[in-house]
Length: 298
Image (tube, rainbow, N blue to C red; front, side, top):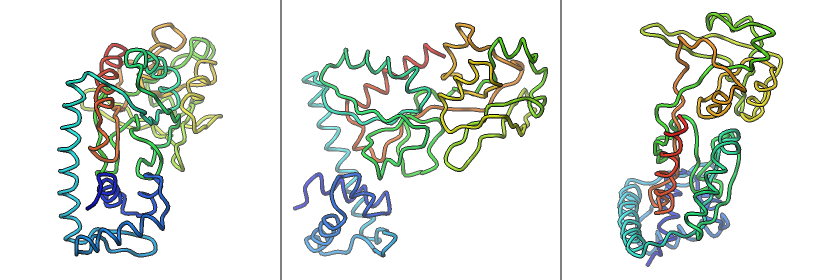
């Protein structure tokens, strides 16, 4: 009889299409994972996966079985949540991946507040602008801009209406003047952000029915959103940041918005996780808490 952990492993392996990735996420060796699958297939009397050296995919019978497992795990988790809610106990360790700038300068102090409210909750935090590989890494949930491209991930909206804003420091504006139109950015020193191999050097704007993109460049390019914000505050150039990242800087006057007649592109904020079994009571409470905080910040 398979245990809950073993069923969770099978579901994760099916979603990740990789036995080794699921093994790393569950902190077991690839050899143990392979042996586990073989044992469960023998017990069930059916083949769950078609495996090769580089890939793994569920068989038709395996896919049907995994769907039932996922439904069953969700029912069990809901029952556990009901019991915990009745006891009014929120506890456990939550492994959370956060964007560099937003995580350090905005969310971190909120997590401290959340921890005071629920003292039996512990956080393990990872700060990175790279989308955490929630199948491969020891991460429960990841707070990220943009809906995940992987349709298998569960994405819960936190700040769905957030947008990017064009901004610079008062010192930069005094020295170089404010652009009258976003198209002028092609001749300005723009602070570009690089994520993995992709450079975000095409900035999009819209107004009424008109929309366009501007190719930008500048003297500094970096892969850390916090560094981009700090460079903008220092007067090094023009930044195109999530409004949530710079809301306090705009309020205090450290940065000023530019070309306000034009809207920046959408930058919705989501909580992403690998499967619904990870939506524990503490995750649901944290999401509600963050939704309230981001709404007030915006």
